[in-house]
Amino acid sequence: VGMFMSLGILSRLIMPKVSPYVFWCVFFSLAASSEYFQHWWLPARVFSMSDVLANIIGAALALCLIKLMIFTLAKSETMKTSSPDSKL
Image (cartoon, rainbow, N blue to C red; front, side):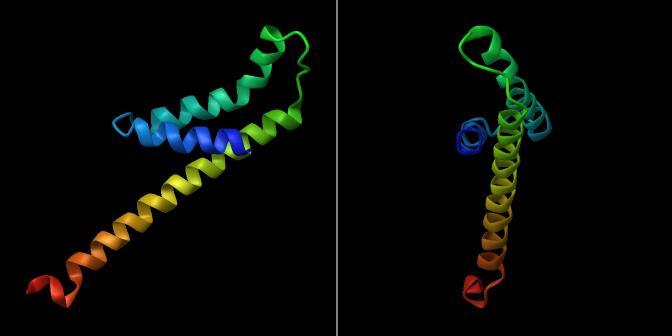
């Protein structure tokens, strides 16, 4: 969960010009398929649906936190421009 959450947040912050729709579709696909690829590239790894679910939950948490950061920043900017002191 933590790895995909961190990876999602950091990746989105360093790629702000990529369409959010495209970014999150690719990222969720990567989260879902990474266990499958690990199974083939690392013979000692065993495919686990619980790991796939954990990856998807981590990606979903990253999406939620990014949306929360965007909402908080937008609200903060709105508060700055609508404060009485800003007209002085």
